Length: 209
Image 1 (cartoon, rainbow, N blue to C red):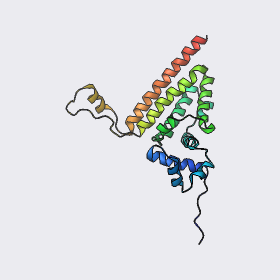
Image 2: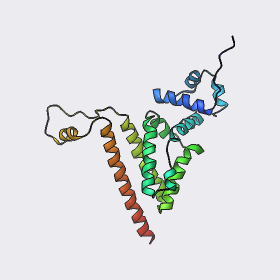
Image 3: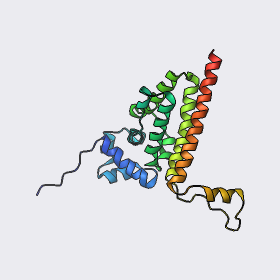
Image 4: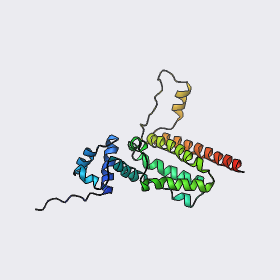
């Protein structure tokens, strides 16, 4: 009987394995990744030159589900809304990856495409160059928090059972529960962001005139 076949090692397989460890543990070590793949660490280095390169593979695996194509066919604010929804959805599937990816510099061309589409769409809409990254970063800060909230427990805040008529208790009683709570907060936050960005665009246009 021949030896069992081992799946060919490539960048996609490395990314999937590293993401599995990140989903489970929030991070990964190269020796652990090698054991998970049943290979030597040196075999991984043939495809990714060090841990930082593997982190970029993980990032690309997560963000490839973010859709920026709407900027080519919709008004900027509608396109931004679609981009934001796909961004939140991508990271809500891998919430434990957020801390890892948020603390590493983005360099991979595939990952950068997420920002290229948004930046081009905002520039075409009239946002000045010195505001575009602030708009994207402000949105990212909100979206990463919203992705974590989507994976949060059903009950995030428990009011003191001895009080029944204070503002917090009444608000908690009136709020949706479960996934509906996170959806309500996300929709409200996204609407507020877009309203602020629209005002910014008007102000920038007034200054240019």
